[in-house]
Length: 419
Image (tube, rainbow, N blue to C red; front, side, top):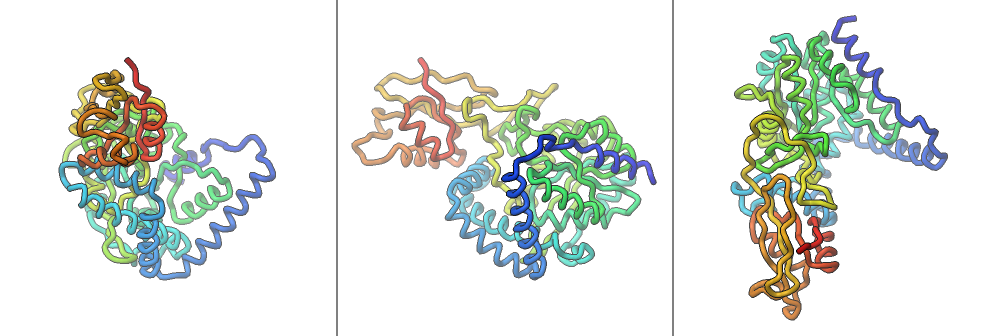
């Protein structure tokens, strides 16, 4: 067994043991029902052509745009932040509809691909930038692959270990599923395809050893990292991002690369490898590189997580740590409203971290603002103010229960007004 294979096996076996407390009968029954439904659903989809699944998925995605209003708000908000100054609000609403369609198609096709012969995955994929991958592997220090949730991720998982020689092991960091039966199935399927799945709780030292042995380690880097992340610009807006890719690349000398997956036609995708134009060995640099990778086909990106969301209790303070050294300045600040209930009296602006918030003053009595006699609800007024600019509102300060309830329905933060 080679060194890299030993490292991969050690990582897999060292995954944290979950569920030490014996689950209740109801919980175990729920897991079995979920698992049974998933297996049947996957098998049915696996028997259907991907081109057909893509068309059905687009239709379901289009329907979901109108049914799941909260998800629609999240997607539109993310797109408004990411592409403010590049596209109009009307263009971004059209883009959001296409995101729903492609997400529906990619989801159904991913489930259908999981039950198909991995050898046929190359029939639906066109590969580009393979020379970029070979150049990174030739350095002999491993490859850190930064990826985003985009395209048919199941086809990518099946194909990646096959294009890279069997002598080089490929691993992906993932979050173990809550259902242990489904988690075990995913691990077994991936291992048969030659892909190792490593828990996100695995030791970074073990990951570094895997890279030093020449392995390829892919890391989903487009999601919120919470308090453990570093606050760096992402599409021009401060966001908590995982520092793991930058740390591993710096400490091991591994090549840094990106991977995009865009829709070429119904049930067909283009998988492309990307190399940064210059060394991106900081978290800010990695996120700037990932942004370029995602822009290859932004409509194929899964924008359903509220990527730039702050805490509900203190929306003015972003989760995350300030990285050491010089960090590029974010160019898209946050918007917030100071809501007045009494003419000429405004709540104090809470301290924002980072200090990138532009406060706007509105209220019941100010000329041109919301007034009860006009018949406009607070929620409708806030939505009108929100859509007055491409950059969305982030939170409101003051206003009492009525304003707070409207903010909750619109997915906005709310801070109690102070003197």
